[in-house]
Length: 285
Image (cartoon, rainbow, N blue to C red; front, side, top):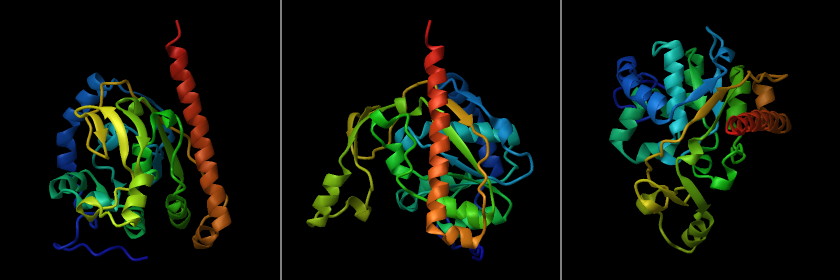
């Protein structure tokens, strides 16, 4: 799999050269304010990230379009390792279709399109990679699933780790999904209406269509941007997950890939359960 060519006319998300260290450093004071005073983040486990090795960071994704847990993880990464240590993050292909201004901002912070070629290209450049496999379904999962790992069965990150021979570092968090309140997801209904002839808005299949309570809308219908409430967020970097076999053959073995996927989900759920229990214990008097 060859690395995508970088040209002046490269489509948004298809370049590794848009990442701007100076731009990232300019965001750090704003992120720090959110980290220290708005979300009052508590974090642990950063010693599990090796100092000089690339890793595949796999995280839970919460809090709607604002995804505050992701931004706070980014702040922690740059605080620990500096903007000079290369890292990229995969962003859903449909997100690159929404706004040129948004995609330019994202690309400067290291976002690339969620595609196997770009993911492999980043790792082969000896950069680490941040992945949230659950995507929109994870971001807008119902509040009753706040403390559940929800990757929606997506296994591409497993195949990537196996092909590129990189360890998986799980990232978990609590609190971020309390920054708004997802009641339910109407997507199955809209999908049925679409099959009956209703077109998608802007021609984009949203893949999720939540009803949620939150700022600034009060009651929101659809995956609209949200302003997160100032809820304390707890993040944790877990121990690396290393598989028994790596390589192209392992990545093409469906049964093995599924076993690896179940292992990652199981270990992350165990760690998340522990973090939730610790937080609940801290609130007891």
